[in-house]
Amino acid sequence: MEDRQLTLTRFIAAPPEKVWRCWTDPSLLPLWFGPDGFSCKTKEINLTVGGQWRFDMVAPDGTVFVNRHRFQRQDYASRLEFLMDADDDTTQPMIVEVTLTPEAGGTRLTQTITLPTARAKADALGFGADRLGLQTLGKLAALAVTL
Image (cartoon, rainbow, N blue to C red):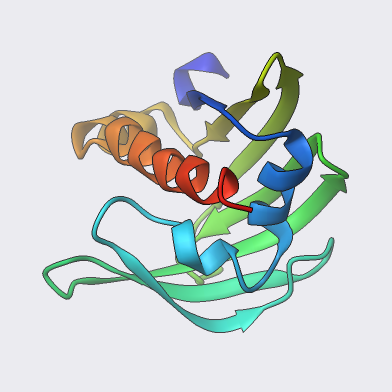
């Protein structure tokens, strides 16, 4: 399975409860999600287990990336899992697992994305998904410390 997984980690200088709020508050998640310069236009948002967030992520050049997150598991301030796809049931979704671990002075966030195939992982790395994902977590960190 490791040949299909991409793992991102970041220390955030805020307690797990604040980081959790950034992931689960419908007014906050669209503010930080996406790489630098990207914005989110929400179509539907229900961040509870069984709910989904359907949105367009808009690149600085105006390119639109259709997204859907379907929430599968939430353990308060410690773990969150969702399926991520292009709001299309014709392809296998990515599985995203986010864990929040308390550390001195904040939280260690680990996000593991399991892609459908090793080729899908290679393609994601080819367009810089790891770098772009770390930018996204940087935006999360910047917001969490202000709450």
